[in-house]
Amino acid sequence: MLRRILIGRHPARTLARAGLLALVSIGVFGFLLLPIRLQGISMLPTYRAGGFNLVNTLAYRWSPPKRGDMVAIRLAGRHVMLVKRIVALPGERIRIADGIVYVNGAPLEEPYVRYRAAWSVLEMTLDQHEYFFIGDNRGMPQQSHEFGRAPRERIVGKVMF
Amino acid sequence: MKRAVRVAIAVLLVAGLIWGIRRLFPSDREKIVRQLNDLASTVSTAGAETDVARMAKAARIGRFFTEDVTVDLGPPQSPIQGRGTLVALAASAREQGRLRVEFIDVQIAIGPGSMSASVDLTAKVSGPDSEDGRPAVDAREFRITFQKVRDEWLISRVEGVRTLEQRP
Image 1 (spheres, chains in turn blue, red):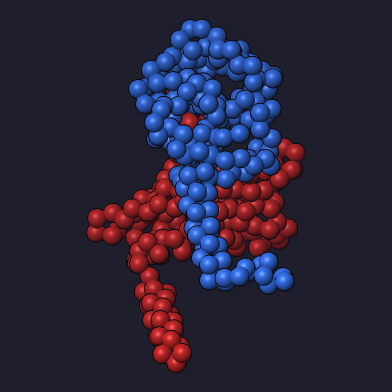
Image 2: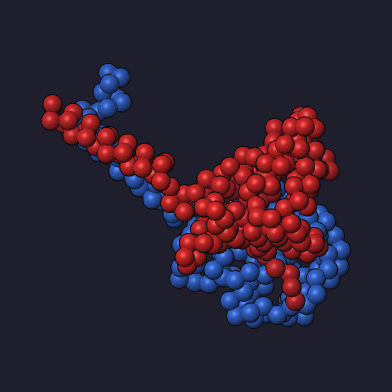
C-alpha cells in the first residue's frame, strides 16, 4: 500500500514525472524566479531580516523598471544581491536634503518610509541608463546605508512580494 | 549486465584520470581559484587565537600578495601600500574575533601571455558587529589583479568596486 502511494502503479512513469518536476524546478527557481533570503536592516519596515522572497528575472523583459519598484541589484554576480527601491529614473535630477528625496526639484512622496534621519546628498543627474536605488530604512545613519546610482544592467529583477 | 558494469567502470576510470590530471596540472584559472580559496580560509578565523598564532596567520596572509601590493578600498579609506603594511593590518584585524570570509561569483580574465589576470568577485564577510557584537554579514565587490611571479599567482592590486555610486 505504502509502495503504491509512494511509487504508483508504474514506477518508470513516476520516476519520469519526478525527473521532469526536478528539471522544471531547477529551471524556474534557478533562472526565472530566484529565491532570496533577506539580511540586514536597510529595507525596514518593508522587509525584515531573515525573510524570504522571490526575484522575477523576467519582470523587465518587456517594460522598463518603474519608480517605486523594489529590485535586486547584482554585485559581481547573483549569489549575493542588494535589495533596494528605485526612486529616480534615467535622466532625472535627484538630491536628498534633510532626509527628503527631491526628484527634478520636487519632493518625492514616500509613504513606505517610517522614520527619516537628516540625510544629505548633493544633486546629481542620472545618465540615460542609470537609476537611483535606496533602502526604505531612512532612520539609520547615512554612512551605514548603501544607496546610490547604478546602470540598468545591474538590475537582476523585481522583488515579487 | 556484465557489459553495463564494464562500461560503468570504464567511465569511472576516465573520470578519475581526468580529475587526477587536473589536480596534477591545474590550469591558470584553477590555480587562481585555489589561491583565492586558500586566502579566504587563511583570513577566516574562529577567534580566540594566541598572539603567536595570530602573527603567524597574518604573515601567511602576506604570502598571497606581491611585495608592492596596493589595496584601495575607496574613500574615505586611504590606499594600503606594500605587503608589510598589509600584514600588520591583517594582524590587528584578527584581534576583532571570529571572522568568516568567502569569495563568491568569481570571474577570471587571464591577460595576454598568461602573466596577469583580472578577477571580479564578491567578498562576503560574516562576524560579530563591531558596535553591538551581534552576528552581521557584509558583502562587497572587488576587482583583484593577479601577477604571475615564478609560476605562482600573487595579488598585486585590490580595488573596491562601488556597486551604488553617490558621486554627483
